[in-house]
Image (cartoon, rainbow, N blue to C red; front, side, top):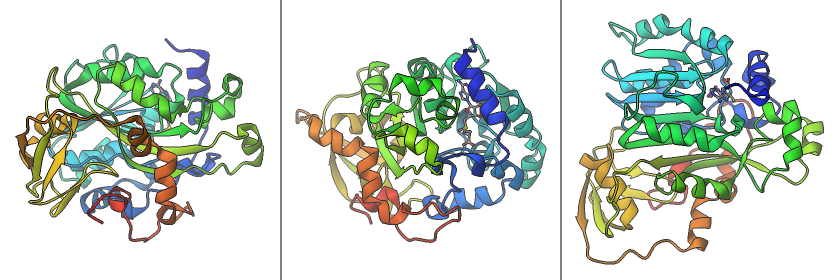
Length: 371
Ligand SMILES: C[S@@+](CC[C@H](N)C(=O)[O-])C[C@H]1O[C@@H](n2cnc3c(N)ncnc32)[C@H](O)[C@@H]1O
């Protein structure tokens, strides 16, 4: 299975001591304003040695995880897994999968520590060494996972279709893939793949953001919803020169595995205010924000998401007979472009100063109607 590119990535990440060893702003510490109060509290309980080797490029904490079975693709040192271990609770379960033996061993060392931190009678987290392109071979059962997360990993995989196909396979119907990754402003030249640092930093393998929607829809997922984005700065001047006019942004998207034939008509939906940490409003992404007890008109696909995923008890949905005028491509372009969203959120995300900022805006609500 392992290709030369996989081996390059393994040796790149085994050699990094801390997130600061990366050459871009991808692995900034997560600003606390981007986390819900529960996630913030959970992160504070993660062991500092685990956090030190955080190499992700975004925040992968979807709402309403209690009792869920969660899979983290490319779990690295395990920071997100341990944060999620707290959020799923003792009856939930988290599996981290990573191909780099050294990181898997490092993450395993803290299982007991976090079990004790969270006051669980038995651990709810396991780490598996394996490839994301071969999840079932690595022992992950088909249709067994409620939520998959991934933080800055798919850009390192040569075969993104295989990764997403396996993710679809192991998700339960109604399950979600919520992932943060690095995207390019244009198709990246093939020559970038020859450079070990460009590949290791994710710059050579980053998908041109417009390609994502076709890829995921072809595999049966819903249209991606863009949750958050920020521009990625390249610190190293030599790498900057190599990147030329290709720009990079981190984007967090959520996509759903819906039951077949579930997308039918437009609907009027009302949020009940019941998603934990989202009392008076629930922001599904940077564009859709549902206020409690306010009826909203949604397209057929969004109606299906609110009816057939774990959010279904949180909405009342009245189907209409209206035909669904699907989004036109200009509108879709605006909703899905991480560079545009990063521009809009610029004042919040401007400086990855390697310290948490205390700014008051939230990417999820910046463009919606809840802010
Ligand atoms: C940029 S790091 C991110 C790690 C972690 N998600 C975090 O946020 O700290 C990328 C991780 O993905 C893993 N990885 C890359 N390609 C993989 C693949 N095809 N299968 C499994 N793991 C992979 C690497 O070993 C590395 O630990």
